[in-house]
Length: 240
Image 1 (cartoon, rainbow, N blue to C red):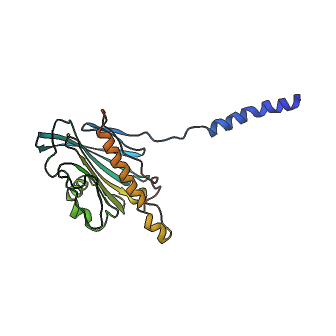
Image 2 (cartoon, one colour):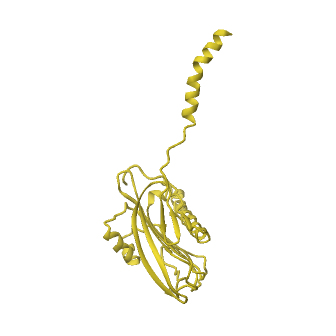
Image 3 (cartoon, rainbow, N blue to C red):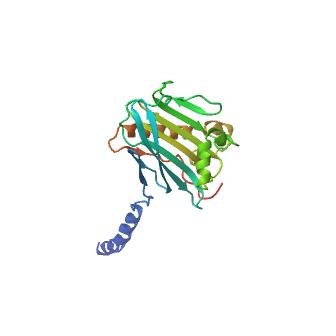
């Protein structure tokens, strides 16, 4: 009995050490937070870089609406750009009534468009997703302002990438828009057969739904907490 007790005492520190290692918390990169208008933009873990802000103003039935746009980019393991986000939000809710045409959300060929505002001219709840946003000249034709902005900062994303935009506007004076260009490896799984290929776009659309939900929730919060949802798949460790 004494011999067994002695052996147990010698093994106890080793057992405690193993247990401690097994229970050690994983190191997770901190989430980045940036103010943008009345909102507080919270980005998912990753190597995000603040790309600055700009101020704008819109004129509506109730007067001028002051807006602020903030951009952020996600870098990969080799320093390449994996995603770029531009978020625009109103600074205050002083404007009563939306600018005319704020709810414009037209359908478009080869673009997934969801208009939860059902065609309202004053209210917007418009999600647009182009899975192959990197298609030849598509972004130049549809968002020349975004192309110009990327060029002015010498930002070139890894290809192929997906384009997503979401606009949420209410007659109570809420205005939030989000533009996202995202490396497809963050949104789309690898496919090995036709069946997997047909459903490979689902995670990207679900990410768009999660993003739109976060924007709507943010509009009703005092601090404007706007949490960008994590991408469905981890950042790649090498270039495409």
